Amino acid sequence: MLKNLSSTFAKTLNFLVPSLVGAMFFFAIIGVFGLRIAVAGLLVAVIGAVVLVRRVPAEGGSR
Amino acid sequence: MSLNPATLARVQFAFTVSFHIIFPTMSIGLAMFLAVIEGLWLKTRDALYLQIYRFWLSIFAMGFGVGVVTGIVLSFEFGLGFAKFAQLAGPAIGPMIALEVLTSFFLEAGFLGIMLFGMHRVGPKLHFFATCMVALGTLLSASWILSANSWMQTPDGVVVRNGRLVVVNWWHVLNNPSWLFRLPHMLSAAYLTASFLVAGVGAWYLLRGKHLAFAKKSVALGTAFATVLIAGQVFIGDLLYGKMLKYQPPKMQAAEGFWAKESTSPAPYYWVILPDQKEQRNRFALGIPYLGSIWLTHSLHGRVEGLKNTPPDRQPIMGMVFYGFRIMYGIAILMFAVATSSLWLRWKHRLYTTTWFLRFLVAMTPSGIIATLGGWYVAETGRQPWVIFGLLRTIDAVSPVPAQTLLATLIAFVCIYTLFMAAFLFFVVRIIRRGPDSAPAHAEASGSLKNAFRPQVLDNVNANAAAGR
Image (cartoon, rainbow over all chains, first blue to last red; front, side, top):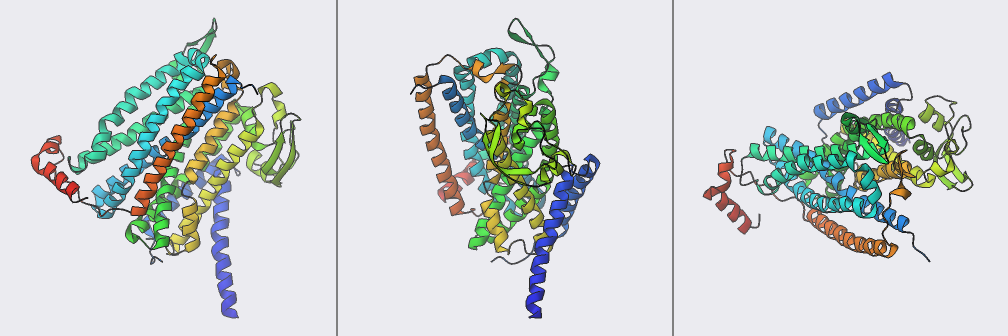
């Protein structure tokens, strides 16, 4: 029972975290919070993506 | 039933240009992708990059060929279907189209042969240089065409004297108010198109458990490029939105689906509408409350301008602009979701094993092409009823050609282009089903053109051809 709950919680978190972070960046980049935050959001998104892609190898076996 | 020559001329141009834009979008994106991949191969000497290069080179070559052929048709259509437009706009856009030929076409023509057939004839660095020149050629081509089209959207640097356009400032014609925003928007769209094609094909192989090394690298590269590009694209798109709101208010009023001079407060963001142009109202509208105010006015209670601010005889058809915009914007949101998900899954080391994500990537394979088409529909239908905004109405630009002639050529175009598309899809599907070849190394050449005709290099080529490689 607890294991099932934990699994559901993890799945929900896996859905919620990227959705919320993605939505926040999207709103920022389209200028909802002003141009300065849009530019900052763009820079953080691009630099963050480049750093993550370079540093974290997308490992994992294929199906 | 009598046929209207003006409508037929417009339908014909819409059909041929919609078909055409698919291919330059792919070739601009794939050319840059190929340049990056070959550069990575030169840097790392990882044979997998060469395998990816060779695989996408064939698809690029076919798309490039169809794009050139269908582009030539458009130049003729300017004269045949829209002679008055060609006559009036010629002094401004004629030189740009000529410059496209002189700069980009010459560059592409000069290096395309080396790129496609020179892998065993010239050295790796010279081959890489050729790929970069072809990529640069496609970029220059897009620049000239976008400049000409942006001038039609936001004309500048000309005056009308005795019914003729006279260029008074070339720099303003070229660097018109929307060009510097529309060019990066289109280039990003092309690069995103290529990224999703690459990632989608890789995901398809992963789901089938085929060509795994190739597939993983394709998914990794495609999603990485897409992630960086979509953030920039959304930013540029928002800047362009502001620019068009200033220079072409009717287009953006139609794109949001509001009729009243001022919307309610807070304004919803409509996703589905059933507009009635005659009665200037929506028969049905479905949207998300508050989101219109937040996205469009950047405040919780802002009001959005509607199409009634523009006199009815100067309004574009709302439905076409609205749905073109929603298709483009909806796909951009999905692309953003893919980007965020890919980063998350990369962080969790599950990028290649998450089945729902791989299926989503496969479904998104043609997303760049569809979004680009949607965007161009917004640009072109939103400019109506003008062909040159504020200067020449489309209806006044049409040639006095009989309707039967236009109908006959339209039918011919539909038949020939259907064949083109069928052949293109047939060969692309065949290449994808066959999968990547094992990547042979470049010919052992020093990098000079002299090697191209050395007997041993040609012998290698012939031997490879005989072995079916």
